[in-house]
Amino acid sequence: MSAAQSGAIVVFTRDLRLRDHPALQRARDESERVFPVFVLDDQILATSHGAPNRLSFLLDCLRDLRSSLQSRGGDLIVRRGNFQEQIDRLITETGSGSVHLSEDVSAFAARRTEDLRAALAKRGCSLQLHPGITVLPPGTNSPGSGGFWKVFTPYYNKWIDAPWRELLTAPTAVNAISGIDPGKIPSLAELCSAKTSPSLPVGGETAGLERLKNWAASSLEVYEENHNALAADETSRISAYLHFGCLSPLEVATRLQGRPGAAPYIRQLCWRDFYHQVLAARPETAKSDYRERGDVWRVDDDDAEAWRQGRTGYPLVDAAMNQLRLEGFMHNRARMVVASFLTKDLYIDWRIGADHFMKFLVDGDVANNQLNWQWTAGTGSDSNPNRIFNPTVQSERFDPDGSYIRRYLPVLNELSAPLIHNPDSLTRERLGYPPQIVDHKEAIEFFRSQLAANRTA
Ligand SMILES: Cc1cc2nc3c(=O)[nH]c(=O)nc-3n(C[C@H](O)[C@H](O)[C@H](O)COP(=O)(O)OP(=O)(O)OC[C@H]3O[C@@H](n4cnc5c(N)ncnc54)[C@H](O)[C@@H]3O)c2cc1C
Image 1: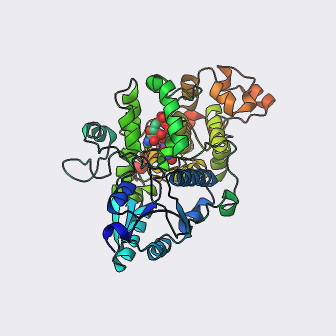
Image 2: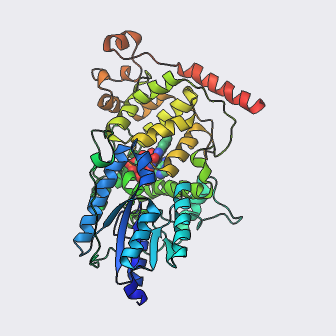
Image 3: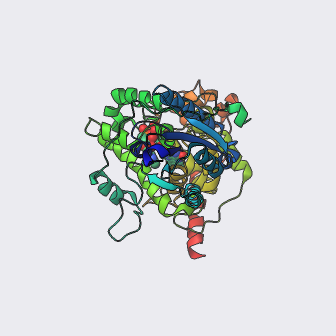
């Protein structure tokens, strides 16, 4: 069989789109018989039971991708089980000689890729890795001295001037997967018994493109002034679409570049690339300190649970934690405030917060979540690691009339600003809203004393 006839497999992972998909494009260049497959990996599913929001979004993405492929004459092959075994089986079924995959950054992804490479080599089948998860592939924007960029600004300065690859268009027609069982996309209930948050976005490339288009038309121009305004809720909310690759980050950046208001927005996209290159270089930072500080964190299950449940007595923190539970999303400003509250006011380990976020966030992403948690906790890449967010001051500044709090903390519905930012004890008692679990000033004194003790230990 010639290379063109022998077939190529494209393994979709978190690149669930047809536009700007280098792995798909290369497979199509190489062969007339391309087999797009998604494997519902048992190893990932075993840990996804605790994250039904992401699983639900993923299933939307698969349905959308299948429908896009079907409308072009092909189909998405869906398999469930052990990742390598399923791909191995498909190689046998299709007689394919190569496998194409978008390169990813986590320790899990890297190990899985290497295992797959070894298994394919035994069969004389090649594994080809492609960009597509980030704007610039990790490792392509490195300091002259080698290694990776440890802080954001120099990374950004190089990133914004670096040549970006050409965008690829989606194929207009794809080959049929004749003779191959496409497999069923299971329902959420078949995969997981846990309940999703009540208000989730619809996943998939179609929904992602629509959201981006509408948002850019109405809000890109005012992004810089509005992106911290909690109640306005005017950020793009494309993070989940980027996490699952429904949108190509390169396409988002390239298409918006030059439009009024785009520069500060594209800078935010660069944070995503920045954290991905950190994680690629130091995968262990998903679990351990980026900058070891020697913390002896407080262990207090009651305080941690009050934080998770939105019962800290700080209205902004509690409203934000409710937003997370209701929508599987939280505004970036609020993420910083609640993360700072857990790690500085309560001096509880950032990993406890990061785990809770990963349970609910639809955009939950190892690079962005763990490294933003570390940034806020002061163990990460922040050049001012001991910065403190005063939750009441943040509330007055970024939710001045209290609309965000009222939206997500209805128990305080009848209050207006300034009382809503910190109700007095009588009002709290009357409304059944708890007192503050810690006094901010005292808590921060304690935090600082712990840092000093760690330094001298
Ligand atoms: C403690 C904490 C945890 C976080 N966890 C995650 C996570 O799991 N997944 C995730 O995608 N983002 C995470 N972020 C970053 C940020 O909060 C979200 O990307 C953003 O709120 C998503 O909303 P948006 O798409 O409307 O953002 P926009 O403001 O519209 O920004 C556009 C895009 O830029 C990227 N971006 C923006 N800010 C950041 C940032 N600080 N770091 C990395 N990328 C950024 C995102 O891809 C985002 O979609 C976290 C931030 C903090 C402080």
